[in-house]
Length: 208
Image 1: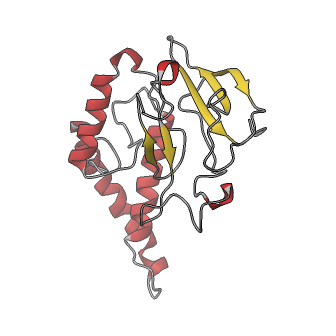
Image 2: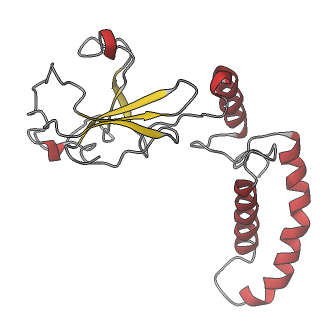
């Protein structure tokens, strides 16, 4: 609570002190319930207290200075650095924190100004793939789309927004081929306000 699940701050450490009596009270209430079972009497009070506080903080989002971790957590020091570094970098969009448009761990296969297709109007694009523990992005020979680990995985919006354009009928490329004229494939463009737009591309045809 002091820094692993909440951004480390003076109030987060004060919260830890205030939570201790609550945990002790819950332990006292349930100690007889767990007596004689294989469950630790400490597990339930810890979980119910932490989850309740995180739920309340979620309801008070934007009101309180206590901020639950909204990214893959690390050490308290890493959490602190990531949050304040990100806040300072994106002051213009301080209320529009963009997230990556997928779940889990992916890898960047082509970055900004990439040498393959990220040129001219596409220079700011990022391509992402999923790799296994050996760094391979497909199983078997990789001759079919279904061999690729990222194929048909769900995509999400980077930020809340309004759909302003959908291109939903461009067929998938055969393996090893590039559609130079329509290299974005199936695409959804979102308007997030404040002059900020995002485009998620290379989606499954007719999946928008």
